[in-house]
Amino acid sequence: MLSLLGCTGARADSPTLKALTEEFPPYNFTQNGKITGFSTEVVQALLREVKIQAEFQSLPWARAYEMAQNADNVLIFSVARTPQREKLFKWVGTIAPTRYFLYSLSARQLKIDHLEQAKSYQIATVNEAVGEQYLVSRGFVKGQNLQPSNKYDISYDKLKRGRVDLWIAPELVASYLARQAGDDPATTLTRSFRISDLGNDGYYLAVGMHTPDALVERLRKGLETLKSNGIYDALKNKWF
Image (tube, rainbow, N blue to C red; front, side):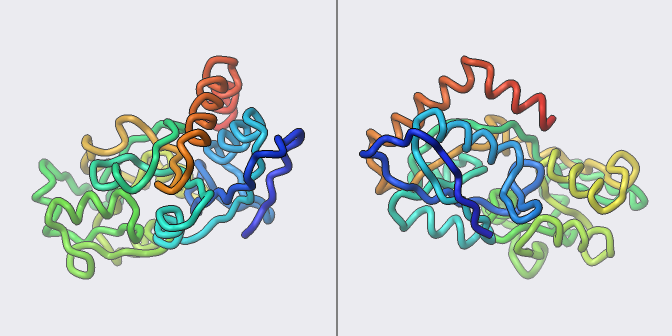
């Protein structure tokens, strides 16, 4: 789905960027044909602040992730910053908070005391998402104890149907998707294990390595302005 961000007063020397994301509610998702969500509105406000236009596109994460690395004038959000990804992007700044858990269905009462124990279970992941990348780096194997999908709602459905034992997901995403499915996350889901290595500094807006440093700095300063003038806090209060 494509949605053109209407920014007024764009400078003549400003490039038109492509802003890539995925279906990742409540951070970024498509509703009534338009891309919305907390992170989306933060990025839109940032682009208005720096007077840059961008074309927003929601894609499967693996495709967005690859395009952002290899194409010019591309933004990507909401992306977790990890050592594995550090040299793949230029990092503009944090745009959203998060915490990661391995979730199970409350009816099963699964308790994970340490990550190694989770290797004996089937875990739903999103292909090339940070949760999956993290588990792979810890010795989990796709197609064996990791069962990837293209979207988080598909992974949640796998958990509900009993096709997997666990689901790795950010806290706000898990709660949102459970409610969208008509479930009460407090009674449907159990936080079986906290992934303390992930999400501590939140989700970022990032750009490809070919992006000029001057543009990156312009975006960084714009994000700092949003966080100092109250706009960021207003959006956070709206969504959370």
